[in-house]
Image 1 (tube, rainbow, N blue to C red):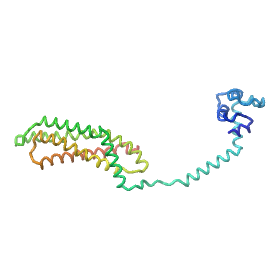
Image 2 (cartoon, rainbow, N blue to C red; image 1 turned 45 degrees about the horizontal axis):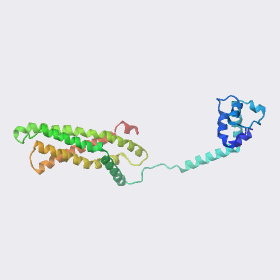
Image 3 (cartoon, helix red, strand yellow; image 1 turned 90 degrees about the horizontal axis):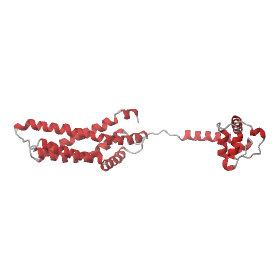
Image 4 (cartoon, one colour; image 1 turned 30 degrees about the vertical axis):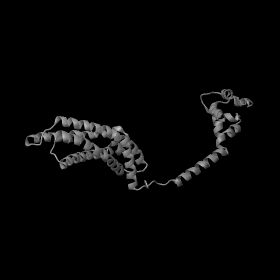
Length: 263
């Protein structure tokens, strides 16, 4: 840039080349004299140069630069970089990591997120226990006789209907994970299937804890049919229902508008 200024007979201090260039090419100033006063350029220039306007200065600088070796060198370097970039581009074919490795890594990361985020499952487990206590209080000792069949049917319907709806409380936290998923999927790190499966696997320990903690409270407060088999059947059935709802939540979240748009 300093060479171009010298060739145009616009001398300027070495450390003020950029400042002088901006001053000379700025159309907010009218005459070159204002530029010379602001940048303290050498006043030894000719009087005709002192009266030049900015448009003339710009035209002179542009013409001088076009005819200089600087522009030719810059163009050759740009063409060389462009050629090297075209030669070096390789189409990305996806992640080279095995599906098993992706599943293990994502499962571990998802489990850590669920463990550290108190609102993901820990707070929901507390709500499930509170709901279990409420159900046990409403249907306390309803009995196992024929006269209590209708009451037990209402209790079971209330349990699976109301407690399954609480599974929707995990959607906001899962949506936060989707933001990370969309970015990593766009780079080809992994796909939808391994992401969903990893979240389902990592949620199983929390679902087991939720089912057996709330199921135990309800079972003994309501006093269903006694026996280890009946108790296990009730808790496992509750666990399966919660697991199905969690899987549906994960799947529906991925097939929503955001995933369809590729965001």
